[in-house]
Length: 310
Image (cartoon, rainbow, N blue to C red; front, side):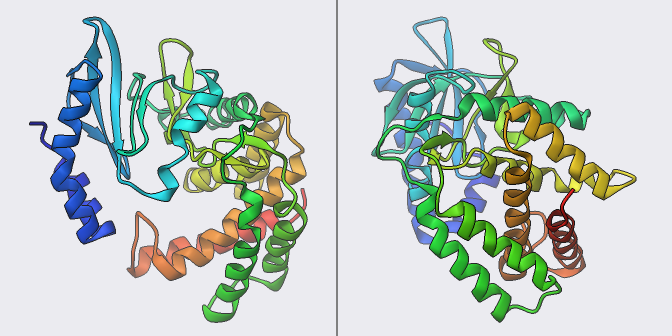
């Protein structure tokens, strides 16, 4: 029976409570059953992401793959649908799926991620080019981001009223305007939905391939915002933060072949969301204390910078 990583088990229980503990108790048996059904044998140490375990395997003697089993959650439902639509173009290949168990057998890639590349321009360029390749006509049945627009606006207004914050009115108004002007009318385009450097891995078949998509349908420029938000702390190392932020926007928009203003507007929206989220829930790297205060202040500053037109 395969042992589950202790860190993953603890974080799952902390996040999901009794439901997480019950799922963890069943997980080794689920993995064993899927290994047998798909003719696989373990081939390396069990790894994990935020919501699932990844078991390196071999099947048919020589073919390498990974078995991924995720905690059952609505946000994980459409990941395999995205892989099917892409068919390996810019993303890992899907070999098998079990929707009921939130399980997939996927092409194995290398553990090295784009986040480990030191050249920031290269990181943004690679992500932009992948964004362009992944932006294809969406199949039916996938969640449309435009359906979240009302909830986005309601939450922004509620946060601005309920939470103490230092965001200027101009920044909040810009985020709400993005929801109203871009959020409610988005193309029927499949996008990754959580594009950041840790979700882009080195591979043998292609230099880089995407993993862990949300399978959302909407504006490809939306993922420019998710990328920039994930790069924010790295950009802090720059001598001129304003210049570094706008350079990243320029490079991503050019590589992704997107309207630069749309990318900036979505990035600003994501920054405002992050500023409020940190105040309500904390961040993964800081749940409380002086570091959380510093991170929320930085999110405020980033939102202000992105409110400015280049």
